[in-house]
Amino acid sequence: MSKSIRLHPTRGLNPKLVVCYFCHREKNELVLLGNVASSNREVQDSKYLVVDKKPCEWCRENMAKGIVLVETSKDSTGEIVIRGGYAVVTEKFIRRTLNEAVVEGMLKHRLAFIESDAWVRLGLDDHELPTCPL
Image (tube, rainbow, N blue to C red; front, side):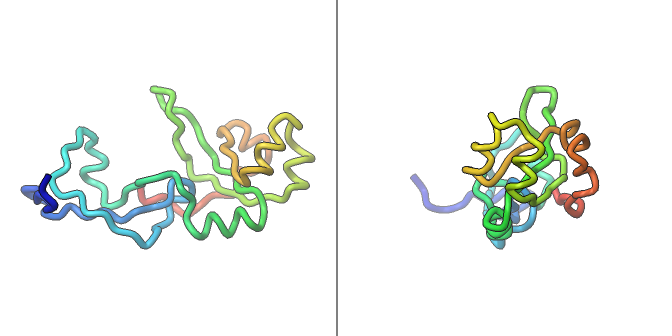
């Protein structure tokens, strides 16, 4: 196997800035895709790319402070889509507002996806990140 990168005919090294899956902030990482075949036009045209589901340093800091809630919905294929809502709440808020069956998992992982309709019902609709680059 060759250790060289095949250049893309028009994009060259085809660099992408890596962003966090949860908050879409840049992670100060760069990937060079070269001539990687992709049928996803958005990936080809975007200068940003999510490469894993590991939280960035900012998200890890927020998880240490409280529970990170991320607003989501499902697309037509059933895949989870991050909507842009992001909030850090206290354990007290979680215990007070949510069903005990889901509370323990949230407290353990320090992170939860909340569907858009529940996001609004919880009064979180004004907690939004700046426009996502993706």
